[in-house]
Length: 188
Image 1 (cartoon, helix red, strand yellow):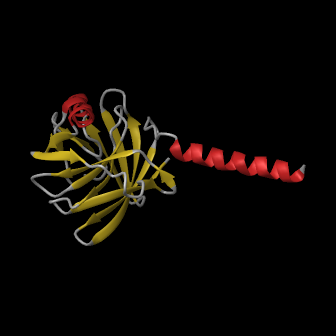
Image 2 (cartoon, rainbow, N blue to C red; image 1 turned 180 degrees about the vertical axis):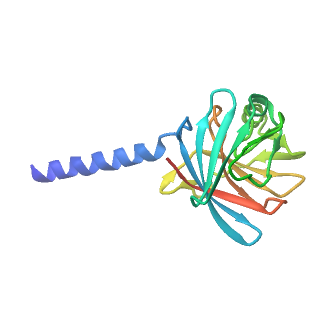
Image 3 (tube, rainbow, N blue to C red; image 1 turned 90 degrees about the horizontal axis):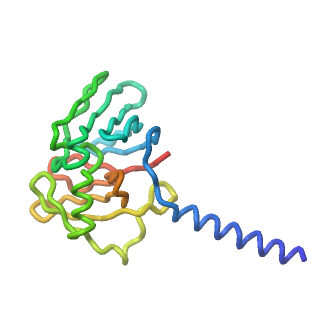
């Protein structure tokens, strides 16, 4: 009897942990994002909090509690943007991006193109969806995360984008031609 209970308990724990790892990540107001940025030979941890996702996107950033500010992606940018903004954040200010720019996300239109055509264009670079079935799953912390991996054609950059049409968060960037690479380490 004790063996059966132990066995059932173990099965229950295995299924619940497998289910928890497969739950999709939902970015909403209040979600905290922890990134590691790799720029010009340095590693910098930057925390971000999603303050608004209704029409526009407001992201508050925090650098080790010493500096903070915000990025504002306009409604137009979030819907139809085709450029990533890499401008250095301005402490204690809200950086309002141009109507064709995004930060930390790709636009919803670009995401729709990626799902439909397996490619999209951003910053004059065509990004093509990769088949990563043979590679280890993308993880944020210990949790497998459903991402779409794209590589650039004209440039050799790579992006891992959260598979979420409502908030296509860029989880990782590698081989960025401007030298700014990053990866997400936590979503809370």
